[in-house]
Image 1: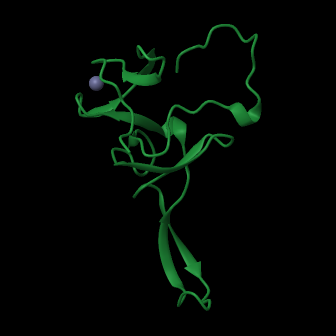
Image 2: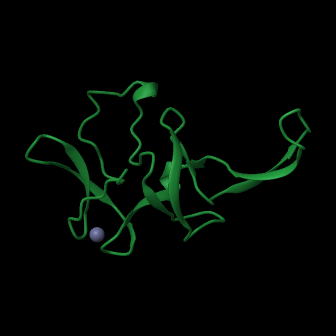
Length: 122
Ligand SMILES: [Zn+2]
């Protein structure tokens, strides 16, 4: 991780910075799902965690309800963002990102290696 200057400004807990956003394609860099790639489904900035499609799958036992028959369902559990890297389409790997401003003032994230803009297309 890069040092962010001096610590004059401490972000409040709810402003904790996470480098990934919903719909990002990320690569898992540690843990049991190391090497897996997936789309970010949900981000919890305050916890510094994110839910990634197909990553950190946990089995949950569900009681039958009027809406479902219950049983065991598998769903992705939140994973800490420090275990994730943004995927660069050009480098074909997880990369570190830098911030850049476009001519119209839009802030984008770019690959530190090749300069490719990494923003999810919606
Ligand atoms: Zn790249």
